[in-house]
Image (tube, rainbow, N blue to C red; front, top):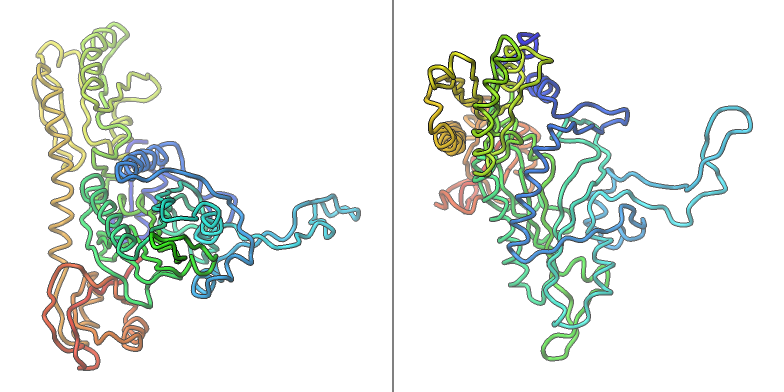
Length: 493
């Protein structure tokens, strides 16, 4: 059974199949009875909760408060901002009726045609419209600004091709929506929240990211600018891992949200929105995990340390438990999440395999002989290396190992990305190299026509115009026209 648990398709053989198997075997999620929707299982949700808790603390540290807005949005709201409705129209699920009834002809339950809604409702694909309709009631004067609000919620987008965590019809996320008195404040806010996302990705997820701005064709529908963090997965594809949007006054104008400024003159409010979703779970899986299962950075692991006793009888278990109890207490006092698995429903070998697949960062194994010798076996999940250490001082040692694992995972992912990020100057070389699963820095003439041509011919997109990097002017690799700087190309999820 333990061998079956770890019997994964290799990443090098079929990366997509490896991912799907890992999600299932690590008990993260499973398909539901609803097309395109998933069930997030307790272990997967525990990881999301740790992400949510940390992000929520970071949002509140920057002055944001949580609120909640309706799931259903009047259809007329979406039509008020032209770019917004165009961007989401094909993904909207529409509620048309409010009642069912038994079919008199015996065909089961049917929609009651007499219960058609006067105005159809959209299950929220995002909440800008309902929130800005609400903000009109909240904002009257510059004294009411800024409004710094975040919402933890679910959204629904009718996706045709789905993959658990990466792209599902329903997904969990947070969406920040802020209102400001000046353009400068709003632009500063959108950049600040992108920095929060980058901080979280790098220091908690151990995922290196590239910060930049999207091209006009890749912007959020209704935004003036969309800022993004882009991460490289182990197959060389990019994953957009968080976005922050400067919305200008577009939604304020659409919903007539004005305020009296300091000169007592009416002015439209300036806006931002920003969000990350359960897609971060996909990023976490695909950045660190290996052919043996999940690999989790300690900062987000639901269980950071597991202790497995190895015993022959009840007396032996009691002896081990007496030795382990103060160690467990000390871990918990240090804020380290620990599980002592003394359940007798599985053999130690199965437990080892299970915790390996689930990515628990450190595993301790202790038997009666270890107690006699004053030692304990320690295994790191990131390296799969086992070492024997004295029980005395083991908490200090493991705490240091957890810090080292967190740092090493980031360094390993950064080295991988750097190794697979290349500079290309010719379009012919670009078309060859993009097949290798790489990030490419290349010149582009700034036109949507050239951008569309590259996407159509290579399936690669401009992930962002990086904030940092080579800003030397050059010529477009496709057209030979002047280019202000290199931009980041990749295939993506």
